[in-house]
Length: 248
Image (tube, rainbow, N blue to C red; front, side):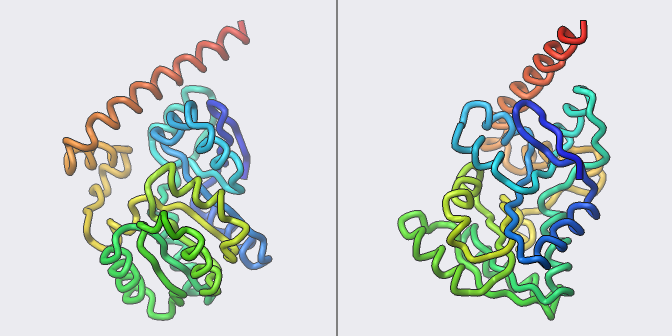
């Protein structure tokens, strides 16, 4: 994988196969790997949130999630082959874990959602070893939850908590988790459990999943996407102008 930097954030240029194979090799070597995906909202928030910025920059693999980042990177002159959607990578790693006999731990979302996610994954992959799961509302008992994850013996940990909480939680406790691989997966459990519908394939293909989310939750999501997308476009143009000035 080739690493580039956009707006102060390092990112790995890779296909889905590249990413899964790299993670598989690192796990087989028992080499701790911290993974994160970066989308427009996260990149924009990193500009003002230093803790989030540090948490993301410290990750071993930083994939590009979201067509906004892909298009922005291309405008800035980078060749990005494809986006690595967090939910798609999660499902690929679940398949890999089932085949390799790696145990997993699911952390985050509401109790009923994470439980249903575990049930759905077990039905899809009968050989999958689920070492345990826990809801995402544990902030007064972080240490106990971390100890529970460590005691489970899980190889892979998937954290379905909103940003920047999940990135900062992982960064804060990574040396105590006892896992080989950890990845933040945002709202993935909501989709896998069936609580939330994912955008149709054609919308995924054209990078319109954000618009589908706005249609599902217009009151909550429209302002978030309007603000972050506007800021991102402004940043892309700023960096494009700076780079052009340097060349001139």
